[in-house]
Image (tube, helix red, strand yellow):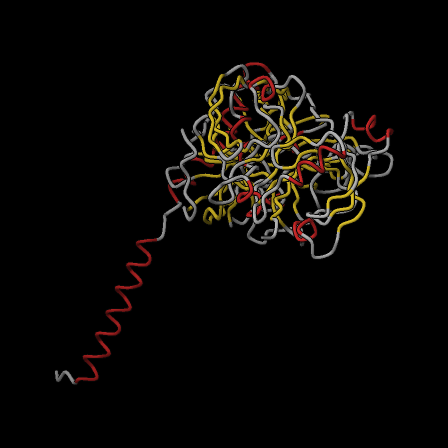
Length: 467
């Protein structure tokens, strides 16, 4: 046989393509062993809800916007005029029948049934729920059940392969896979609570997957699927799971006490932007800026002050304000931890004894107000706060902004009419005279933080004075 140059080249190209395909296939994960081993411990949760007179389920959560929905599926016509069936997913964590699912799957349910992969069904008891983390613990009367193992840590990397098993749209034990898109996503509830650093993935998650497990390639549960971002009602590649550290903490407490108590610091916080970072002497924006403290709360008792920036808590970096609740919430109440703060451009370390926030507790911090006259250097027209406003906000003084001069330092910083100034730099503003003295003492070209009350909520704004 004669080998022409063209034949040799063609053979070489084909051989190269085959080798490339083989190498590509070798790099792809094989999910078969994970599915075969773990599917028996994944269950379908079937619930029956009472429907209100308006035809809507009064027990379903309403705090999630339409585009960010908890994916819980209702299927079929209601068996009675006042009942509706729904379904979600869950998984077994102990051989004696403990099962993890989402709180919103079973919230307000009249009955809960667990269906196994072998079609056995059990009536389930709701041991406890935790709406703040959207987790629930169930129990069925059975023994020798297959179980799933929770990962020991949150050592999950962005780009890592993950796998979900659940019952999307009632299609039981469907398997989908994807990668971790991001970690530590903050999705505050309607009450402004933010205790879950969600795992974001591009795994195809749909109604009915709710409460099901998210696996790593070792077959360990690294999260519980909880929410999806969607405008169509189905998956668009944005799903969110509760990380295993939160799952382990909540499930342990529900199993032992039937309720959850999490760490509480007693502060209102905000992010630090570029201007604030400069005005507080930081090299870059980071940390959680304390705008207000609860009276006699853990932070106040430890000596924290409004204007402090928390940069580490219990040895963990706090890159943004949304990270602080994630860290504090996992700390057992009455635990003493170190908190590193920036105060007056200097680093300090304080000891804080973390407080406790029970499942039914709701803490809110009262706001302060202001009062005043005019500050030409900042471009603000200010005046005395009416007496009724002082009483309303429970403060003794300050200045209220009546006009912001366009193009002024205050205008560039975003200060608005109606804002109430209670602090200029580190100087409290208790009166019009105090405000005027504080403004007069500012250095040209310097950056200064102003503490405001805006629509009842405290915040800091960084303002830069011209040279």
